[in-house]
Image 1 (spheres, rainbow, N blue to C red):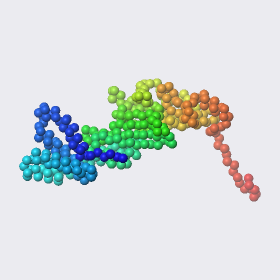
Image 2: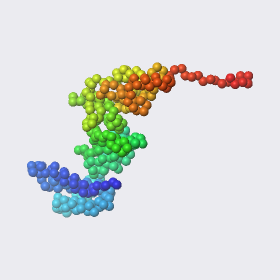
Image 3: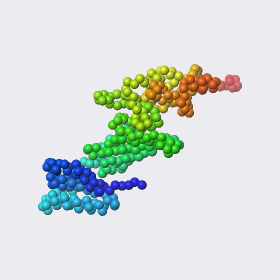
Image 4: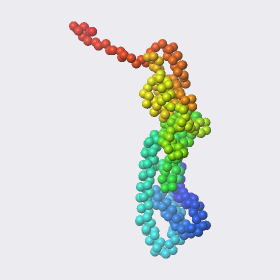
Length: 343
């Protein structure tokens, strides 16, 4: 069951946090108590504007406390009744609506930007009702999602959003967990500042133990590429000049058949790719994946068991049949009728 935060109490708590940031200025004489009271009044008025049409039944008793505190601050800052009434009308008719309109504009832009980011990351299913999940009164929000990978395996995501200095939500990190029969296989938190262009299928590949080629910005500010895989505790990065090149590794194994450009793209993306192993005119289904640790292509049989090139050749030789042949197509016998007889 979802637990809803009391936004009135949250507004008071947020003010207390902001007040602690301002207190050193008070001690230094840069600000006075009147300035502090005005800032508090603006903060609470904005909270009241946001809650005016959306306060839940459980929040309404606390709205009374909010109104009382606003009234106390207004009397303190505007002792003159006429000036106080003018300030209240100005807030109600002009400042409040203008604040809400600007907040809605900023929020719409923020939500649309996040939806585009999620779609590009392969997490578009989060975007459908994103505006309903990102409570504007919260600073940090976690959104969970479970993906079924098969009868026994599933992938769990937790998306962590946090407000920046401008009040916009940013997707800062993604927690990924791979489970089999509800038992945790591997988990990792991906800080997006360290994982540019991270996609959901990258997370899946890394949690499955596969390596991928990552784009990153080096210490000099230049864009570079390196291989990375998840170690027992932390990611294991290979230096950009590490002697492992997918194209070279594939050329060293000409028995692997499939479009080379596709294979390079998929393998560098961390995927486990289906292909065929050729011996003579016989073709055996296999799977392959990048193995930078051993500077080679890892081979798996059609049941995803590790296998060597020698073993594949032996298996094909033992079978003694054509698994798949690329040659002259068998010509179909054309049947016709001549002199009343089928040909």
